[in-house]
Length: 230
Image (cartoon, rainbow, N blue to C red; front, side, top):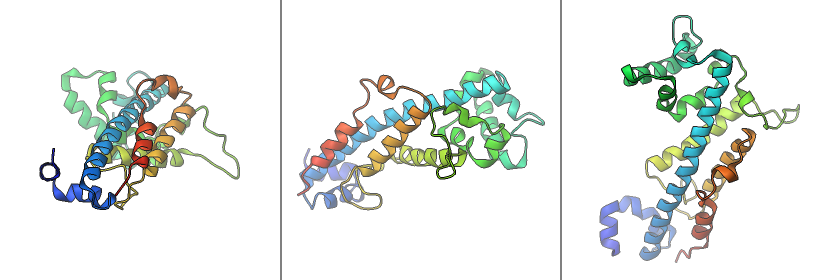
């Protein structure tokens, strides 16, 4: 496809960043755009595996401490999320239950709740409401010391960063640039990729085995970094 048609399809404002990053070389800009799509596709697979792993570990933990229907019970009168400080969490569960209606099962409810819901279980009020024991799903997390403390807020913040890149990919935003600049660089993606691997290890999940045959993120990052921009 020639550049004019390519630009008309994806829109000049969207493609402009790629052309700028490639010093005006439109052919290289099209290559970079396609490689960004491929990188986004590959990385979203990794994020999806991580998201499912995280929510299942959280669910298993609370089943063992709170019971099989802990989510549904949490929003009943007097339930752990039936309070002013966790009203958004309660509403998320209520909305998902209404959507499921007669098709409700605990497993379907777990799958219906989004990444943001599970992330917020590490925030101050939700963490306190659930018994302040959710960090147990990260048995290999470094032990906190007086010099280095890794608490629920740190995990919440890490998950927020992963959620940010997840949303960028979902909204078709580039992940092959320096943040906020039209400069070809994969550091942003590499950093978030390492965050996910670290959290897999803290959960004691063998990420190499889990992602075998699926993980080409660093390979594509290397290809993008080696690209000529002129």
